[in-house]
Length: 478
Image (cartoon, rainbow, N blue to C red; front, side, top):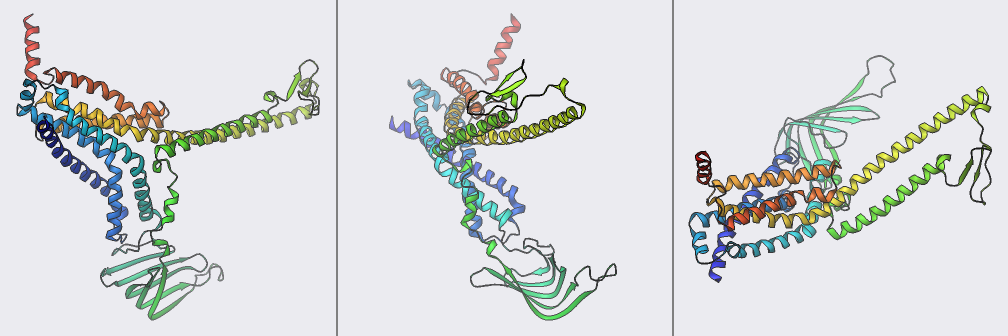
């Protein structure tokens, strides 16, 4: 019996790691293709690029793992059925569930590991990868000049070179535009130059050789006439650039540390409770503000419609002035009252509109936290569900290798992915509540897994074309 378990696990482990590696490779290539324009020409060190790919690979595991489970389970049982090994095991008295048990134990352990991964490691990987991408693409790009293209990542400078030697830092055909808000634009040309860094790499020195400098005089001094300029020639000049903003600093992590994607489910629980309290406080302030602004909704007032007087209910408040009736008002007083009422209505409308915008933004943020809380669990259950789809499906189609199993695995993974994305989109559009959207793929695929497992356990010819032909022939004869 141990040999049987070992044989089934060995048949499953190989395809699992192969398909997992292939899926990770294609997902990483997709990431590089997406960010190739942001990464190229930034002068990134190889160690920084490797660190980025390492953390990005961790964030892609929740997408690659279901692919590997589905594909490898179909391939394993497809090979067993195609080689008649599954038939031999059933003939010896082994049920399908007994044959699946070693793989199921492995999948359950993998599911538990996936939960701990998504709960503790994935938030850290999201934080690190998001920080590096932000530093590279938005805030702190490294100093990298491309030949023939203006480099504009240094504030107030546009630098273009015709030729560049990356090994020595030597430049040829240098053109620099310096935009100065006080003195206007300055143009610097040089035949050649060299880039040098300080020992602490906080400053970059650009040494220019054999060039000229054009600088306009202060505008406005000479009326509408053509503006004169100063022109100077130099044999050698050195420009200094501060590179302190180009280093990868840990402070950038604080920008994303408190985002919902960077939290474990326990931290998300605490955040959701805090958001509940904030929501109650905001709604309470909004209700009180509306009541205070509108006499009709104010609980402190009692209106006597017969007498026309308005007094406060509570004794500690002094009574207010008598309400004037419209028929008793003069034309000027009536016009003033209308203008005041219109102004009050516009003010209330703007106040309610602003509160609505803020409330919608708050609700969207709350949904993101709740959606992420459910995501910490959905991957673990999706792995088990996809296994119960892939394993019986392989036993039914009775085909191994990379042909038919690849087709079925692709179709069912696309179904799983489409259902997942659809659920998330429906949550974002407030069409359904978050828990339904995040669990929609699992809930819809679970009956399919039960159905396929039942058919495989009873040796159903679900995908046997000849069986359907025989049914059609019987129907025609009748």
